[in-house]
Length: 70
Image (cartoon, rainbow, N blue to C red; front, side, top):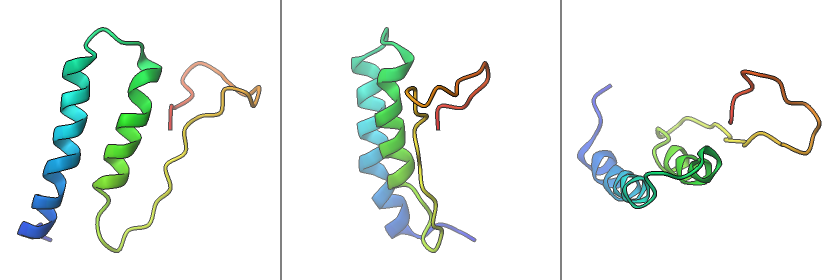
C-alpha cells in the first residue's frame, strides 16, 4: 500500500514537532521523551488501524528490567 499525499502531508507537523522537541531537549531524561513520542505515535497511525498507546504505570508495583515504556 503506497501512502497518499494527504497522509504524508499529515505526518509533517507531528514529525516536525517531535524532532523540534528532541533538538530543544538533547540532554533530558528518558521519561521526558515519552509523552512527545506517544503524541507522535498517535498522530501517525495508519487509517483503519486501531491501537491504544499506554505508558507504563510506575505506581502499579510491577516493574522489572526490560519492561517496555509503552
